[in-house]
Image 1 (cartoon, helix red, strand yellow):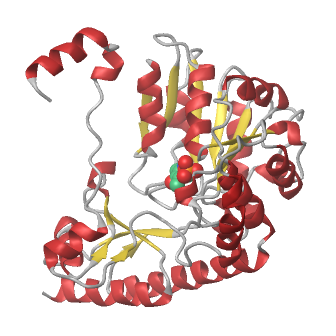
Image 2: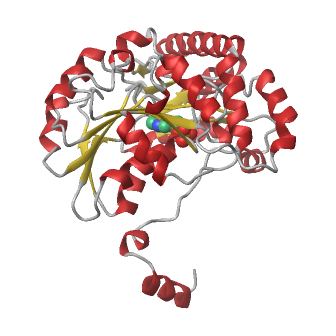
Length: 381
Ligand SMILES: *Cc1c(COP(=O)(O)O)cnc(C)c1O
């Protein structure tokens, strides 16, 4: 940006906006192919579904393409009903959004008054919580995790005060994979002040084995004591393989959902995303296949990483956080680069504040094998 443009921005924009830095996306698959002269690139960096998009859903999207000239039905009632049936909750408790990112943004702006409220979560965590909180002009409070990368509940509660509008808990956690037992969440509900919304981001809960050991959702009744202030987030981006269509949802007390529908942009879930979501929910075969490939891949990667003497964090998600062996000749960043050179993209967690950790998404069988072979090469070099 030129100096006059910068001056213009400074004169025109809110200070919260000026404090934002430009988002730096990683190298694209094409850029990596070009830079390292590769034909094949395996991307295990964004926790996407290794099976891609369900063929049934693809067919539905093509068949429904002729609807794209219409506005979607206000309130996406068919999708809301299908989700209510899936979770056994009242349709009035569900709000669908342009990814669960949209629900996160709405929650922050509905609850937090700029300059007054704060938002509390563990560090490192999902970037959208902090971006939307800062954009809103509210204070963002991050509580460091312990060395064991678990959740220090007492420290979290110590950061909460009467101006805490929201607490975000990601479970299974991204990027660590850590997943607390449901008893911990029940205890947290009891200890949090009723004035604070507890948002439980379950983007990866579909992968947990078994869900009922970890998810608070089956225990939840919106009118139940201690649950008046709990919101659950779910997404079609992971298990359902629809990250690019942008579809997620929140499950929350009806009074909150009612107001959320009022402030939400009216057509943020587009007509093809809605049709795709409905088809995906009905597609048991693809869902089962996705779970199978993810669970088998997760077990395979755990075994192979341990065989390479890496330290693997236990996970209930579709990715693994690991550290290289102490005696390795390269560090995490070195391994990340050596994998890139071999056409394998994973995440170095430096930007999450974990410079000696790497995160690999579970891929298809051949992708996982390629990754393990490339890591072995990197460690031997
Ligand atoms: C992937 C992910 C989501 C999903 O976001 P969408 O906007 O639904 O794609 C939400 N929370 C966390 C922690 C995630 O990793």
